[in-house]
Amino acid sequence: MGKRFIIYGFAGLCMEVFFVGFLSLLKGDFNMVGHTSIWMFPVYGSAVLLEYVHEYLRPFSIIVRGGIYTLLIFMAEFFSGWIFQNVLGVYPWDYTGSPFSVYGLIRLDYAPAWFLVGLIFEKLHDRLISAELLRD
Image 1 (cartoon, rainbow, N blue to C red):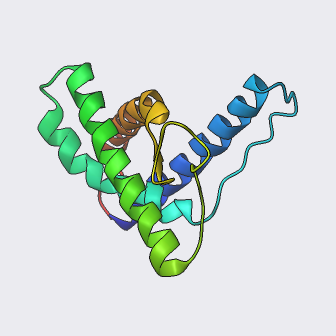
Image 2 (image 1 turned 90 degrees about the horizontal axis):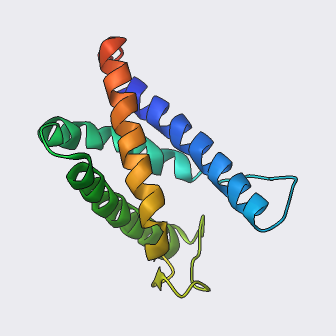
């Protein structure tokens, strides 16, 4: 599980940097500077827990799977954000300025992105199975 935690952590960080850079392009910044926080590594690494959900959801449609991943990711983002802010006193993200924000911890307009991220991690899980990287 440790190797997969690291793989998911780095994959998440890379996706976030790409996403933030793409959003900057949409705002007219052709430098496309992307960034993240190292605090996000354990959050993305915890996607290793989605492997169990993925195995259960295999027979379901892509819409059902993506929807469930979206809900689970929103829950993880909300609770990890709450812990970061209220226990650790750090703010790796703060969505308070968004009209789609829920307590500044999640943004409902990010649902399509989380839908895709869940499916991307599902494909990564399948690749790890085929490469036999699921054993630690």
